[in-house]
Image (tube, rainbow, N blue to C red; front, side):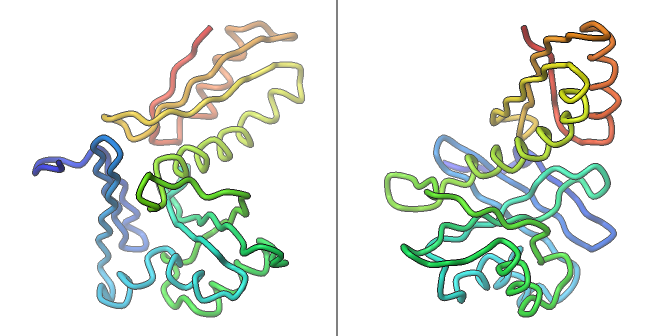
Length: 199
C-alpha cells in the first residue's frame, strides 16, 4: 500500500516546467507528473505514451524517464510492435512529433523491444523499463573507455531511496583501475544518480 510522505525519488525539469515523482511499493510503481502548462491536455499525453497507441503497428507502449546530464531526466518510450508489423524507431519518433504539441512530452528516444515486461495482471512493469533506459544511457557513456582498453561492466538496479543504483565493475588493461575510476567519476558527475564501484 502506498502511503503519504516523500516519493521514492523525484526529478525536476524546470526549464520545461516538468516534475516527475515516482512512488514504489512491492510490485506497484506510480508516476505522478506535475506540469506548469496545460495540465489537462498534458496528462492525456504524458511523454507521448497515449499517442503511440494510435499507431497501427503498436501493440504495447510505455514511457519512462531516462537519466540526462542536463535536465535530470528526459522522456523515452518503449514499444512492442504488433505481430508482422514493420515499424522503425525513426518512424515512431516522427509519429509522436507530429501529434504531441508539448515539447516536454515528446520522447527523445523510442526503443523497439521484443517483449514488454508485464505484471501478473497484465500491466506494464515500468521499473524494468526505467532500468533498461538507464542501462542504455550509461553503456553509451562508458563506451569511450572500453574502446581504450578498459572493460567496464554496467548494471542497474532499483533503489528505494535513489530510484536507481548503478554498479560499475572495472577491469583495466591500460591506465590501471584507479585511473579508470577517476575517469568514470568525471563522466558520472553531471548525472543525478547513485553509483558505486564493485569487484
